Length: 256
Ligand code: G
Ligand code: G
Ligand code: MN
Ligand code: NA
Image 1 (cartoon, rainbow, N blue to C red):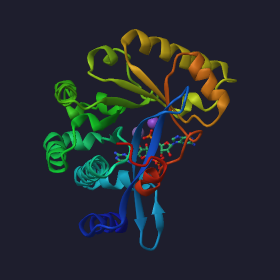
Image 2 (tube, helix red, strand yellow):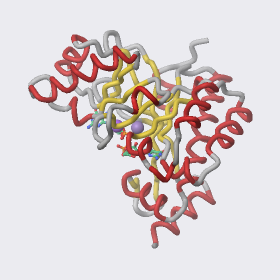
Image 3 (cartoon, helix red, strand yellow):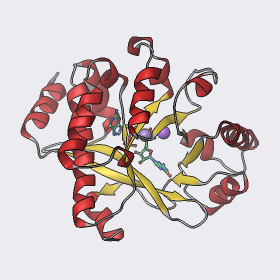
């Protein structure tokens, strides 16, 4: 219970939570294509607490909608800053918890942040895990996703391939992109099973006209296998690790 109270205080007082940004790149030439916003909690005495340690706490104690709104507001404010003052001009992708769809006023939170910071919806991507898509508590989220996508937000399925989902949803749901989980790319190209799965996912995505971004690309052998099999983008340590906004600005100074 202590941690949840501290998280409440961190949300109320500000200053302890921050977003780090993990850049995404075109595999063949490294061109910047987007970045994922990842929540960090700089606890005053415990140091950095990983999201895998405090997001479940927020979810259990009814704080996820508020925390998720903070993430959206922060990411959109950052985009607004970069639009005004120069900086990278690519989509920032935020992770959306199923509880934001159930408990939060997600659509109006997003709209309010975009309006306040004068940011076009194309610059805010939404990542949902497979499990979110199938969570019965969320009801039929396909009309809500469709509305968000019709508004201009790109939509990605995160951790693709790790859930217990049927592939049928891919035809039905309005999504733009699959994020291929690190589990499948880690041992490429030498693991024959993973190589087969990845090649098949890439072929399927091509048929469905979905983009695929490979996570966890750490070396040139993985990169080359992915390129040969038609994957165009990646997010991985080969190019960068998650870093604060200031570091992003230093690497991608004003372009316009
Ligand atoms: O960055 P790191 O590997 O520690 O992230 C661990 C997990 O936390 C990832 O699965 C990531 O999707 C999740 N995560 C990071 N930031 C957010 C966030 O703002 N909201 C939600 N719901 N999950 C996040
Ligand atoms: O579950 P989600 O995809 O949101 O989690 C993203 C997390 O994966 C980030 O915290 C990021 O640090 C981590 N990650 C991204 N690329 C790599 C990589 O190339 N190697 C490893 N080990 N972790 C990665
Ligand atoms: Mn993610
Ligand atoms: Na993932």
